[in-house]
Length: 356
Image (tube, rainbow, N blue to C red; front, side):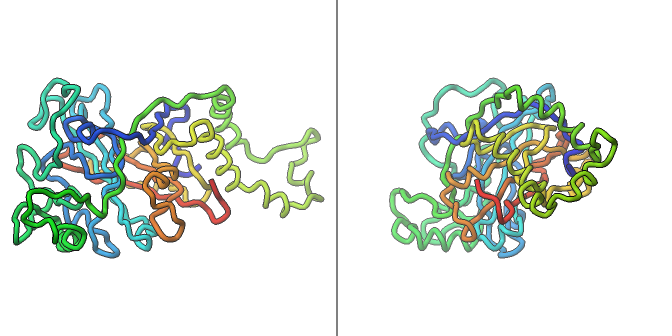
């Protein structure tokens, strides 16, 4: 398929599932993979902020969707490495695939974290209001950099006037200048840990991967007497066959088959592997995937599954964000970068006839 030429079939797949976790387990010093809540920033310098996190269509700040901690083995510059995904929560904007994807990485010896792994517990019970080392203020609503302080209490800051207004109407009008703020942010997605485990392959799946390329390039099939299969089926109602055996339905049935054993998976990680598409339509060609700013090609790294929508409480077709799958492509060499480097995301929707 187009867009899959540079992937490696048979590459190990790691599945992601949402699980409840203690808040401290999802903070930056724990190097979490997580969904929702506020970003647990990896590097504390040049953190993405407005206008880089502003929707190009409605011009409102985007919401943090998830992050995946994915170090590159044997590469010191990527000893710590996390990819962050943001999206606009306005359905009309999201239908146009207005999302942002950032990569941050650090060597083991860095300015922000100790050389050795963190301890097994934490006494911290409070949200970060500023980033360590740099002191960058964070927006109370979304957790992104924000220096606009409340004019009355001066204790909370915001990334934009929009988020300040949201907080004021939601709870800060009552809580301003009080001892504490108990209300949660109104725009955040529910927060979960992304727990992972390897995908188990059955014998049939392994045989399909071995035979897939051969079947794909086989060309026109021949009958025993040498005639083409199309000629042999000349008297068959081909239109009726097409309705039941289209390429689109084959791709979707493969998607359902591969996910049936673990129906609650919300993420599939397979760096340099192949995406599991939900449709034969709108699959990116090699030309659709831009190279990294360093000049290296981008390769597939992971995909977000439609099952995540159930956990986000937004699974309302046509009235919320929606996707068939979100495929993430990152720099194939994970090049060195200062701060946060923007990577590439491809959104594929279900066709109108498909249902999970």
